[in-house]
Amino acid sequence: MPLPSSGQISFSQLAAELGNACSNVSLRSYSACANLTSPDSIIELRGKSCIATFGAGTWSSGGALITARRLFAGLGTQNEGLVAGGFDGEFRSCTEEYNGTSWSAAGALATARYGLGSAGTQNAGLMFGGNPSSGNSSCTEEYNGTSWSAGGALITARRLLAGGGTQNEGLAMSGYQIGAVSCTEEYNGTSWSVGGGLSVARYILAGAGTQNGGIAFGGIPGYSCTEEYNGTSWSAGGSLIQGRRDHVGSGTQNAGLAAGGYMGGLTLSYTEEYNGTSWSGGGTMITARRQLSGAGSQNASFVAGGLITSVVSCTEEYNKSVTSICLG
Image 1 (cartoon, helix red, strand yellow):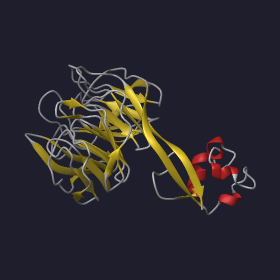
Image 2 (spheres, rainbow, N blue to C red):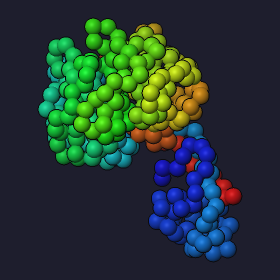
Image 3 (cartoon, rainbow, N blue to C red):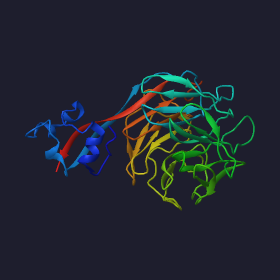
Image 4 (cartoon, rainbow, N blue to C red):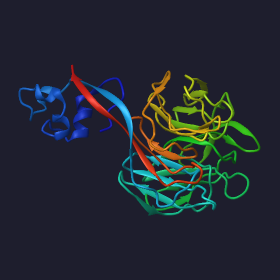
């Protein structure tokens, strides 16, 4: 259930998620429901607010990718994920969809490539940039849940970039051309336009969030550097505890997640969570790896594939349990 990591939501929002009935097993598991005079009625809850308290995040094993690979892109949610592209000795165009349990083959990218950026959902995805066997690509492709079609080309061709947002409000962050570039571009569903440049040009970074609330962190250089985007310009955020490159990011600007990566000769399993101001330690991944992919939220995400000494196909899921909820 996509409750926020902090703050309040109205009961109407909560009820919409749970089918508008306190008799729903998910809602009845909260102690607040047991305190109602009539647990099967929602009348007493209308107009009240709910605050979710989340426990520590932990990683668990998920279904293995069909094609082990690295330097590919992911998008969507833990139960509706998608990955595409990558490299495993060959440039890959294959796409796979995740249902929270297993991966299935889907329509291939038109252009095989690695080091691409991504945004959107399993039924409305966006992939852009990358390395299509030599040099840099400006190619953008849109996914409709079945197949990919051509979108508007990036203004600056590049690879090893980060992405965020949606298919109709996408965000391309930094990357590599001849060297690291700082350029940001915004997608409107048809074409890209120039946005504010990052303070620190970098590549093999991670990104998350939305077009008007993006976050970029880590990469070469600026291994621990975090920046936040407001739709116009970037500003400094809290530094990563463990500087890194080749990692993956998910979530939002105020509830971000960084997992895996590489630093100082070490492949990392360390996870960090961002609260909009600073990073804190999260649960440790089962398998340390770099050049992996993933997506989702801070409270429910997935990572897949990557590189240890060779490419791997393993998937892991990150979850934070709701430990309590109070009605005011």
